[in-house]
Length: 351
Ligand code: PEP
Ligand code: MN
Image (cartoon, rainbow, N blue to C red; front, side, top):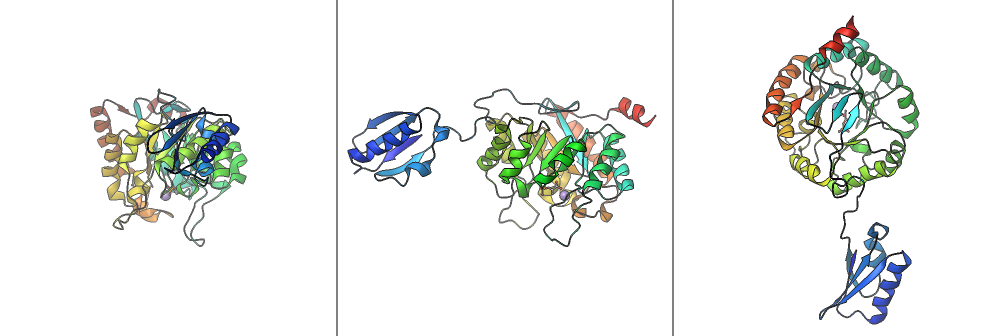
């Protein structure tokens, strides 16, 4: 960290800053220029914060030199992390597709969805059992019963499941139901107690971007999970709030390129919540893969018009199958491969 002193800062102001730095176990390097003095803190600067110095007499401003996140930064961990979810590797050369309905509704809906997404080539299945709805009067999800419905439907095709955890009190239930990937939704990206708890378990986590979060805030949220010991973290860009009202959110494709440089964690894109309309999903999916996304999280429903949640953005099974064909060609052109349906496994499980 560097502390920039005001031009008229006195020796006692400089000494006080030096003493504060040393009190935190860091060394000090003072550079006296003709205009002003700069004080450098040498050591682990993450122990320091500009708030500690900015109010002190004679201080103009203080700034970090290093990034505030460490465990998730590519600066400290050059190789890309691959998160292996029961054989589906996210972050490697294959682009993985996670698909399924917004919410778990009925057994027949879930079985039709599982059959459809597995056959088209999805390697993981999504479905919300606990739904964060804007209105308290809207369908809130099937709850625990929904976890079992998702697990049963996905198990027939050996698809690992991805589902949202909203409440820390449900974590044990998620573990009992063998949830393969815990999704932290946009509204909980900075629920630090929730992040700390998922940081203690050995279950992969998809951390969605807060709808108004900066990339730095998002990576700091991921750092919370990593700091607890859980390094199986995937980041999911799902669109951000801007001044534009013509669509649900703005897919921040730039974030994908920036994240691939800034962090070694896999990057997922959710084109469904970004656009909010099914017809936008193919274009946004292509843009995401072209920008370097490692996986897509896509909402698919056997009968979109009847969906209990996010009906407008759900692809039908046929539309999803068509999109998968397009994505297969695109990933090849990008020198990657798209996840493939494991037909052998299907035959085994169906037999
Ligand atoms: C979801 O994936 O169904 C969801 C609610 O996503 P988000 O948190 O991005 O709104
Ligand atoms: Mn949804």
